[in-house]
Length: 281
Image (tube, rainbow, N blue to C red; front, side):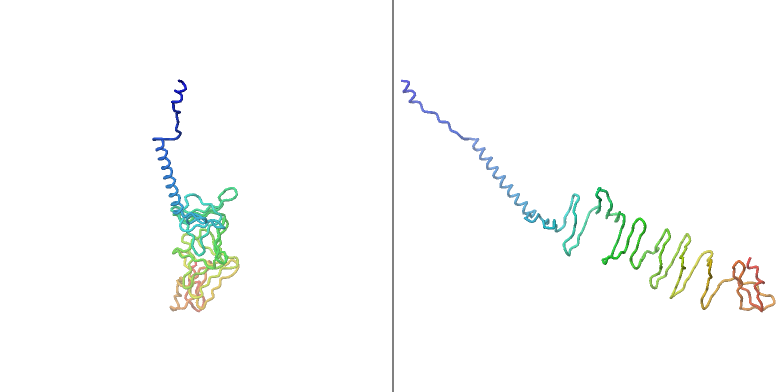
């Protein structure tokens, strides 16, 4: 009887797998993952297209054998370190900043040795020496701690007040422009012109005029003072008293006092300077 009972019972079968709501959730997550992969791939292709990624570079940036080639306008938010920056052949190079453009040169110890700052307040340069040369290599301007050299053939000052020098000026030649006046002036102090071999003042096509408020002094320590001209006029010289016995004449003689003072005395048959010798006092 026991054998019959065992033969009538059916063996139990266990199914292996995911069924029901678990299966539906799995399909949903797989579908969602596929959608994310497709969207991510589309965004990646779009970014590559917009940024213009190629084998040679990205966007306006190209990688060449000589370095990086950048076309168009570029903005750098951080410091740029480069050995050489140059524009394309035939195109200018523009450096633009909302505040200033600074160029710093450092030595091996990271110490500042030269600096150029172009800002809203002007251009400031700092260094041991400043040189400006022409395209032919000729020195036009040089400045250092000891001297300032102007190598141009002509130095022109266009200001209305001219050139102001607080100390002495050494030059072999001072000349005005054609048809212009040359004026050397010291408004509040003295003006000295010195040279070991002489000072020569010429006015080939005009007059030479020296004007002063007090005394004009011509002094030669070891030589002489020569007045060489067809006519020499000494205006506004004081006149001595006329001789009471003589008649009024328009001819005078020039008298010299021991102190160097000059005056006029009416000419006579002899010297009349003694009559007006009181003018020497």
